[in-house]
Image (cartoon, rainbow, N blue to C red; front, top):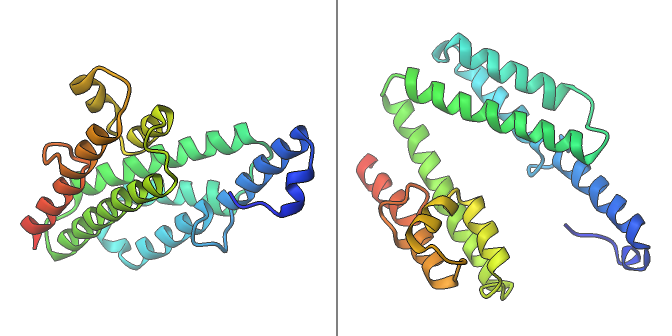
Length: 194
């Protein structure tokens, strides 16, 4: 989160309020390609182009999500924002599940799947790069956050039964072909689909 230099002089309470406000505004920015509102709007726009290929359940979930995140008012406080993010995550998981269950396995599905694997590969690689660049590789809480973000914390705990360490985390997220969130898994899936 980037903040202006004058922010450094603000008091702790003002700083927390500023951080929360900036987070909420950034998250629900309908103009920025990093905002939730923008991305959901784009998802619904693209889905509209292939409306005849989507199930009615899928379309209904997308429309409800759009009304809530794009057309609705921005959340007032951090708790409301986090609730809305949780609902958006659940809706998007439902959309993905419906797509896997109902979509005909044609070239469109294949390209959608290729895109998903490419996006996951980029995400894992860029996130690991960011953590390494911040010299946070010895911070167990950062590594735990990284595992949580990569949906690999339970796998790590089951295999290692200790606090996260850089080398096993990298191994799990980059090289482990059995971890469905690892880079190696994504590359194998891409090779299969290509």
